[in-house]
Image (cartoon, rainbow, N blue to C red; front, side):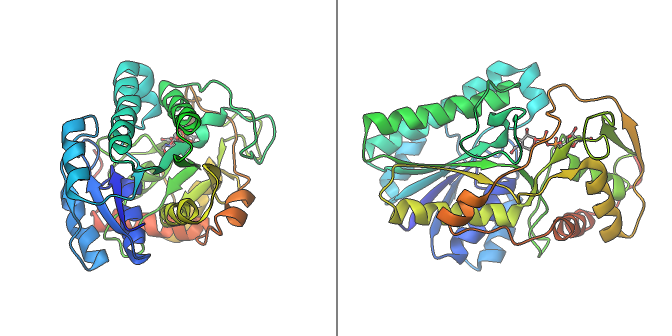
Length: 340
Ligand code: WQD
């Protein structure tokens, strides 16, 4: 399994995965419409890979363009990242999320079928669990209706892939349920580039630390958790990227048609604990206030990751502090700014 089509391959998780694919001897081909990434990322991906990366500035909803790529390359597998991922935006604009996140998967699957490409790794999310009854949450936990259109598109896409296996026994799927990706490549050549005001905690922390934001608002300090703030499982983006390499190897070597894996560290970390980790690695004190809860947030979730450790032979290597350190180094590479 050599040539891998990586949809959304210039994005945050996609770019780090392309680097790890090359390190593992695969030949990634990027298709990205740059709606949530920039073409400049490619130069740094190529710097890290020490080689050119074939890439197409195209939309995954365009079956004609997809067909051309499959005609020009002997694609043996697909990693599908391309999707919108802002929970809050999905509530305001659900149609945009249903059309793009579900539509693009369907287009990719239709063209894969035309070329008898039967292996796909799908970028899913822990949001499919909602607020689990028991923690850590395992892959066997009940899937309850997601509390955002974004989360629901992940549930629908998972079901589409499972249904396809029923109709085509040759079709093989790995669903990777990400917990919270954070950090950046240790080289600081690639990292997270949120457009506008960051939705996610860690980029908001680092932008506040660098003076790009006045202060961080902690969304809720009255939860029934260790310190009243929400608990998440923050996983280094390079560890997450490596899980995709392991998933491709699983598809290549296992006879099973469906693998579902939680990709998290197995540790729950509160917002205040994440702030403390940042303050330690940046040797600074972060400017933050405790504010109201954010609609849609689950109180606490962290992964049971033993299935991925055993069956994918994958292990999260970086600690929370190392992830914060890499996130901070990346932010500093983007420069400090006066508050705005
Ligand atoms: C984490 C915690 C916030 C910002 C979402 C998606 C998930 C994945 C990651 C794609 C929460 C708190 C945040 C801020 C805060 N997306 N927070 N102040 O919502 O757990 O997960 O992003 O892969 O699928 O659902 O991540 O980073 O937005 O929030 O207090 O300014 O930080 O309330 O408790 P989330 P997040």
